[in-house]
Image (cartoon, rainbow, N blue to C red; front, side, top):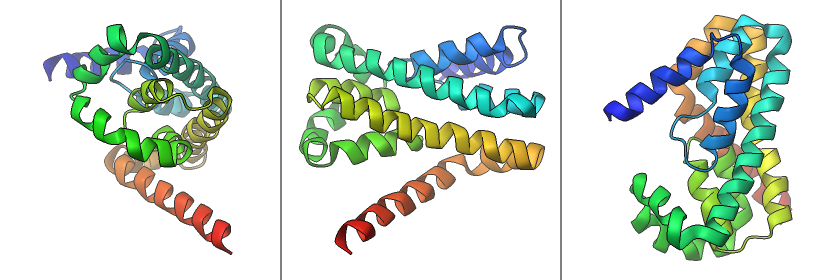
Length: 194
C-alpha cells in the first residue's frame, strides 16, 4: 500500500512539471498495461491550470491510453505465460481471470467499453483481450470510444465547472463512472431490442 501511495504522490507531482504533457502521455500509456495509477489524477489539475488545453489533454490521454492498451493486448496475446500472469497476480486478479473467460467470450466488446470508462483496471481487460483473442481492430475502436468518453467527459466538466467539479470528481468518481456505464449499456440494450 505504501508503494501505491508513493506512486500516486509521484504522479500528482508530475502535473506541475514543465513537461507535464509528456508525463501525461507516458502515464496514460503505461496505465493501460501495467501501471497502477490512472492518468485522471494528472488530467484534472492540468485541465484546471490551462482550461484552453483541456480537450487537447483529453486527446493525449485517449491516444496514449489506447496505444498502451495495444501493448497490453500484445502482452496477453504473446507473453501471457511469461509476463502477463505477473501483472495479473500483482493486482490479485488471477482467480477472476479464469472465471472471467466465459463472460468475456460472450460480452467482450461491452467489457472493453466498460473498462475504458469505469475505474475497473483497464490493464486487466487489455491483457485479457489478447489472451482470449478478441478481434484487434474491434478492440482498438471500442478502446478509443471508451477511453475517449472517460477523458473527454472529465476535461469538459473541468472546463465548464472548474474547481467545483474537481472536488465532485475526486469524491464520487467511482460512482459517477459506474452510473454512466450502466446508463450506456442500458441504452444499447434498449436500442437493440426496439
